[in-house]
Image 1 (tube, rainbow, N blue to C red):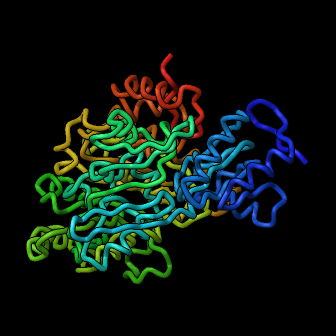
Image 2 (image 1 turned 90 degrees about the horizontal axis):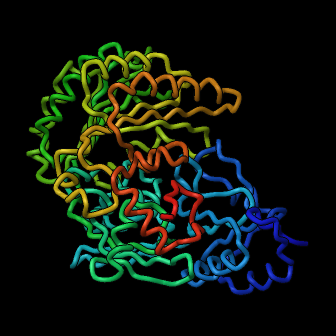
Image 3 (image 1 turned 135 degrees about the horizontal axis):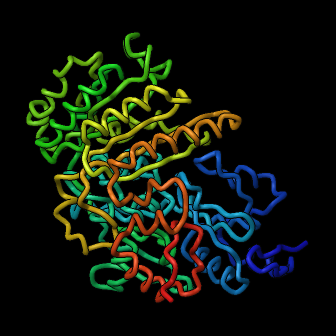
Length: 470
């Protein structure tokens, strides 16, 4: 038996594969193995790719061994941590999948409020450990999102206005580079690599662990107020103006979706899509109650589920909207502003959802800690747009794919007059140089130069790829 290298057609002899397998503490999964189909699945069911080798890494040694084997045999390489990315850039056809999902080590120091976590963890798993100590990490609006992918591309989450992006709280990272070296990147070691991985995605190596600063946030004020979409224009106008003066302890968003059957909300919210507005307030909760009072009184809303809760619960409150292994197609960009015309367009298209599972998201991330970081401090592309717009089309039947994709593209095209010249790389639903350049703007050329230094052969290209400089 042999393996064909997808990039070259080179035949890998069975003995070479077996010799490689013997170097691993983790597992090697191949086509025909009983768990092959389960192992290759990821969050988005639209992605159906078939690697030839899947390396379930147990530790850094396995990662280095896999990188060296891939390099010496010119194999196509994909890297997967939690597998949550909608574009499916954590798996490949042919070649090798380097799977970090079993690497879940955590080392917390409550005294210094720092935590070191391995790359296979989700934000929910990290915050489960932190909750006991009344601490929280900054990344993730959804608890099932992976630490690695989210941090390397940015790291928006429920604490972003108070404490910044996940990458703004990154103190150091361990990285396996394309030539098999194991490097530490921080403000004092390999500073150029540290700059690049804070926003540049998986282009520069495989990050095996992250050290973060974490924050006091044991109990927070979290939740949503709900309005029917027929009142959506007035409610979104109010929310936009409310957010203009909202304290930075509040990170908030507006969501439009259909009420799930098991969500205990009034029947008045089941006749049409509904608008939910709210988020998480961290800090003095009496101050939070006063700050959120106008949002809770406007309308008034059909339902109000804002309450005090553990941060761990707040971070998972939107999980039900984003189920695993269904069909996803996303389009996203920052907004120049949440104008009345933009609101009209959002409400108009949201009234025509082709799927009951689709969610439209408007995030307000600006006006706080993220804005105080210098634009050049990290590779993260854009800090100057306060609102982010995201259409997450979600459906279960593959026969409905064309309808949902077409509607999403038409909606996004209608929004183009209101969109900024920039995008959040973690929300890009498709790969391609145009989207990557939009995500990084003027920083792209510097990133390309660093790509040439750390990965001149573009081994790590199954991602939102930054090509090495010529």
